[in-house]
Image: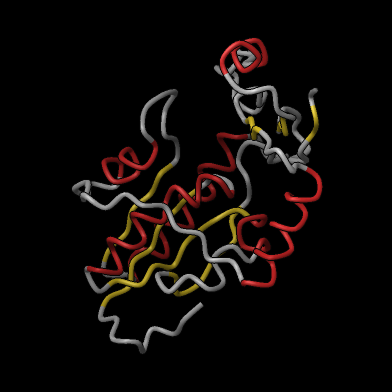
Amino acid sequence: MLPYSMGIKKKALILYHHGLGDVIMLTPVLRELFLREYQVDLMCRKPVKDSGLLDNCPYIGKLITIENPWWSKKGKGAQLRENLSLFNELKAHYDWSGEIQSHGKSGHRVNKSFTLMGLDVPNNLQLEVFIPQEIEREALNYINKNYPDGYIFNHTRSKLHSYNSWDSSEWIANNLPDLPIVDTSDESGKHNMIN
């Protein structure tokens, strides 16, 4: 992460309870704030911080770890309130703050991120990933070795949300190429092969 001394004039704080894929979908918001001369401190779950995914992101000042409300031993509601309490305590030290607790059940998450934080949706909604080149090479080598013809990454079977009961396996089989499916359908966060 880069220091605030790079021409950044303002500091922003975002509370974001979601995981790695969702953080990638947050990058247009981070970029838009950066263009408005903000650098963002992001309150995020430990796996997001530990992943290194945002270590080279010029839009981020620092990552502040929060507990995952969906897996918290305190219960979802209690953990959401605790995270929100910390956010409310910290935001007094920032020029701007925004939070996203839920994107809802459907819709375009990138657009919703802007809307939920009271920001206008810009024309450029390009997603960005900030990983070191050596990790990118390692990942691409793994993919090329293990999935030379490609694969399908599936997250719609996730049981983390009570409203998500749709099993997409049949739809994938009927509508997408016959490729291996990497799925995140259990609560471990591990990717599992389902075919």
